[in-house]
Image 1 (cartoon, rainbow, N blue to C red):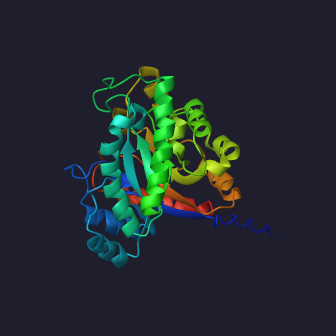
Image 2: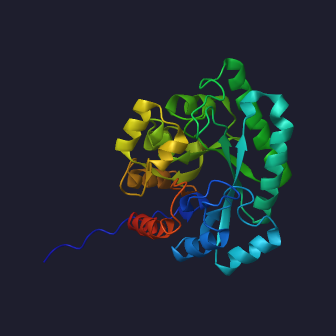
Length: 306
């Protein structure tokens, strides 16, 4: 008689969801993307209860309409997403705030509590053309840190939301060195991190180490993996992020790195409630590709206890 397998520990502090990104959605309106109705239908059918808004304008921006659509599918919004270039200094604040206010208003109306903040790219993700230098000057680092603190303060005061900054490939907040520099330069009461496990691995970072070192700064998770063989070629040849995604650098779990079980376990040990939102970059992709991947990924995460 064989012994019964040990039950997988429940990761009960993690709230698993998905996002339009996992359906190949990068833009508010694009002929290569699935219609928003199909995304909502399929994300619910795949077994997710939480979603992000995705690019502002992809889902309906009228709060009453969006509330009706998500309630009908038993979905709840976890966060909105905003894009910033605050390292460029005070001159960009007004334009940034105009964008932030739109997204924050809808996010608050959906009763979500987070804004995911993505820094601007330093190179064009289609042409590979340098938009600006990959490294920031000391003055630009000051603009970035003070700008993010101001953003965190004003978003909280005006909308009751918390910002979580998303380290991202081909941006100035990317791997271990720059993420640590950014965290050390910002107030933990105003600015915390959205740890995207795929982007952090893409940039050479160790997600478990980051959680164990800066656990109090982890406010949100994006679950993602990279294909190490494709990544190796991407790094070797300086391939921009957009073309790298077309090559399949972001792959279906559990086929890539980092291994997600240790990441989820480390996050659970923080003993705080965290969103863990699946985001598998797949732009562009065939319209029938995302749904079965989403189903398999949800089953895999359940097998991990999430």
